[in-house]
Image 1 (cartoon, rainbow, N blue to C red):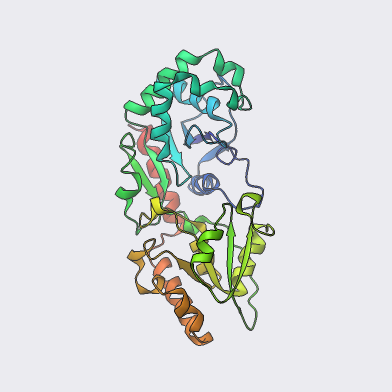
Image 2: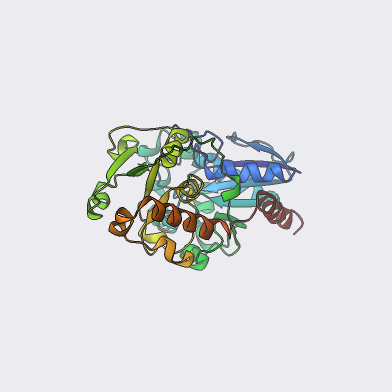
Length: 339
């Protein structure tokens, strides 16, 4: 089976990330390859032939996102696949994907927004400007017609209806827990862990950090947008988890309790560190993820070790194996091809 995986962003078309962390799109591709599929994960060209592929997977993000520099190419693929009846699937990898509904509504009310000058840096901008009417038809269809089957990264324990319920066009969501496919980093564990918190982030979480009133040192790392003092590659960040007792997990209110997949939880558990998350994020996993920050900081090393082990057990006992994930992804794709 030969598949084309592409999308609207650099990550979705196989461009990777500056800090070396694996995009969710890469994990989907890894699972499909593990299942025996031949996968091309790349940018597309306008009008290219889809005939060589048994199915096409297209990643979506909100159209107004500054990251959606491949949007016009993705819309071109969607249009041609739909017109030809070529097997088509969507996938999402940004927790803010429900904003796409509002973006589509805006584009329908104000068609000029789709090709406004602000987006002149998008690939094939001139081509899009010459096809405004055709692109508007695609936008309207995506807003009012059921989507192709859509793959969503989510832990098995989440409230998935709460996760996708705002996107009424997503009538065929498939929730895939990609934890087992996340890259394994070789870790070195010190004899004594540091009593500190680690936060690696790409957004500004300083107000949230201050609200926690923590007494341990916070090792704050991240991109320029995070306002962190320095950035760190993911491999080094996960090693820092292994040397520290605590990992901070900032809340995103829109996805609390939904089970949206976050590699932070997986890597903290693998590293034997304690994840401090909002009480509403993982209520399904029990008391191990409900401990207050001050209580954690008062624990002995033995108690900290026990709490970290309890979190690891609660998270991983519901995790499907890499083989299970590969079979699930293959089944989703086969279901579209054989429809």
